[in-house]
Image 1 (spheres, rainbow, N blue to C red):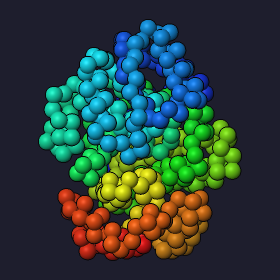
Image 2: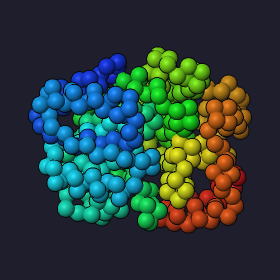
Image 3: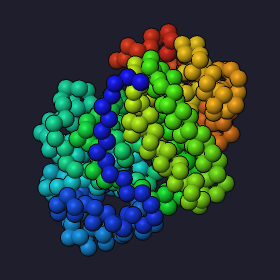
Image 4: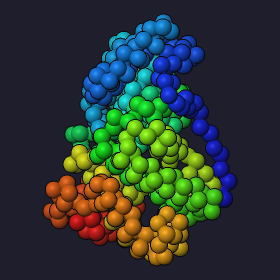
Length: 375
């Protein structure tokens, strides 16, 4: 293993009814007023909004709410929320929703204490030096945003989907109650499974240095996702499976899978971000198309690891058999594996590549080969 420093400041409160204590958790930080950020009106219909409101009031915490955050969140919405946060002089951001809501909330936390154009942080023109405290109740297991310092936002005008990272935007406290996630649709369950696996395989396959420990840890997360996804498709109310799935999602991108790992990159996410920025496909669905296509192009660069993946995860003997097994599993659970499932074809490939012109990691010719694998 390479030398490393590991620090994760997020406190996780995991389990049934933990959301009822959100006011108490926030009050521990002396916060008196929050901006409550959410997505659809589902949290009002299912009673979660009322639960949160009651807990905040019981702990003498004022709140103003901002709803309407969409999947693949956009910078326009974030700017509107920043304006509200400043006008209302909130002291913290409370995210109630999935990864899109939390990524938006992290960005709002940065913008609320800055006079800079918020997109400049994503372009690297500005550095994050301060942010409001962030708290969350996560209602969809997928992105791992509840325990990391990343936020991904789309600029709907420029068609760029970029990320920011800072230790200042790790949530202070994340509430994970698997029961709150059982109303997630089957489509978004399987898209989430793809997203979690993608978080795991980036470092697993591309790292120049990868320990046996890390490889085994990643394989366990992937096997857990495969097993629990199949259970949850049949029985969405299975709390044990839901809990394991949620915790696997958190650990897939909280830094633990890459400690002591070196020389890795995120090519699948890079390609998918162009795809979803242009065509607004669900992130996990885009990843299940990109992953097998990229793997077929890349596997000879690290064939030993691909053979290990095939054996440990699917009981297969060759790299290609492992890739095909993953693709078949995606087809089995119903997440897309071909661009045509988004009504995209050869004509769209050049547009996707053009939108990736800022990156130098993979050549244009190789990007074309990867995307042709996805037709």
